[in-house]
Image 1 (cartoon, helix red, strand yellow):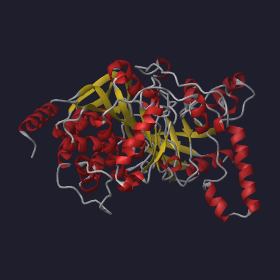
Image 2 (spheres, helix red, strand yellow):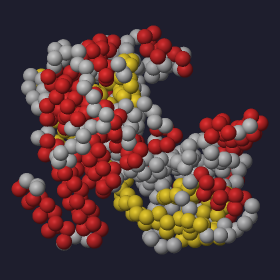
Image 3 (tube, helix red, strand yellow):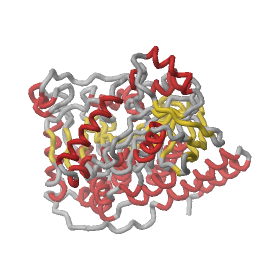
Image 4 (cartoon, one colour):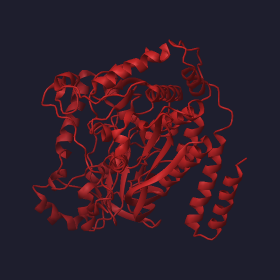
Length: 568
């Protein structure tokens, strides 16, 4: 049962919902259900699968309690179900992202952790509804696809139009002259793949001659459709429809049809559109190929879209911060780091739901077994990482005291796989401390992890870069692939069922142990940087392949605090 304060909140929220618009009432009812589900995570835990008795090299009782909480009393599966199934993807600027922020605060309140949502700016808001996409002629077929993020909808009305393939142009002038021919049509702007079978499938089953022919066809398509200027238009198709979609929209097209298939079965990237009138959709490799071939062979295809979406203008966005204050060195910090936003082709499960859950569960464990740390333990659930590390960069600008006092930051953002390496971020002294921490872990953990010492500073791929650019100790946790790049990174298949919960339990327990050891460390990590000669052989930031090229420590970039006005 909810505590009295929470009961009052639920009652007040219900009263407010009765006086609101239907859309707001729906969101509030959803939030009340999610909040109630959040309370369930304190129920008895599901027993850990494959439980084992660990081998501890020390008699540290706190490490043993962390193991018991993380491996034998894990909450990650219940937390994941609420976050990924009930709340769903956390696209920046959407009501779902804010709902997820508030859900985190409800958990931290239950766990006795100080929590807050920090507004760091605004981003273009959007509401995703349904995507109904059908081939109408020359035969009827429901097509596999979805509208791109931030696409305008069709006001839930049917829009039926013929299709046209974007031709190749000599230059942008020729493209502009062609545009009237596309008015009122759906324009196909992506490459038609000669096969939707993954390369490894061809490698396994094809004859050498057949494989060579297919490789040649794929190369021809890439040459024909590749480059920053799509088909000689002078416009880009980056991340979805880019500037090309905006220019087609100006020309009066009915919509834009794209496809960004992975080299895998059935997966497509679902990125974003900058259109405000003409909808943009992404189709699966198979169905895009179908529509393309029908169009190419003049078999008069028509497509019907019925899309429900709202463009909501600039909306406030937040980092969610949790904190356990230090008792001896409160101005020194250990930070658990993971971006909380996601694209929304799936549920944002492995990018970066699993990284967020790793840090969330680690914070739950620490609040239970180590509630009075020597150093302050912070957790940062960063927003808008997908749009340029916006949330974490804003945090470092707004909280220079945390950057100055940072003892260690642990960041995870590479899918569901168990951690198998820890990068010391280009700081030799951080590497020395890392060796000591790993030596204190259960043998079953330490034997599975390769320390990257001195490692290299993150160059911008994830939020540890926002701290590493200052020369602060930022440790990157690298995991087993599980075909992350092919199947779940930014795709329509990034869903709850792809999580490997044994690996997630391992990661959360490991992170809690490292955070405890860093917070309890007798000495503070110094910030002497590794030399270029130390970093270059590892292929560090600024180094060319195999260590070639000049090395330069990454520079800090200013956080954009709102959507680029040109793209709203």
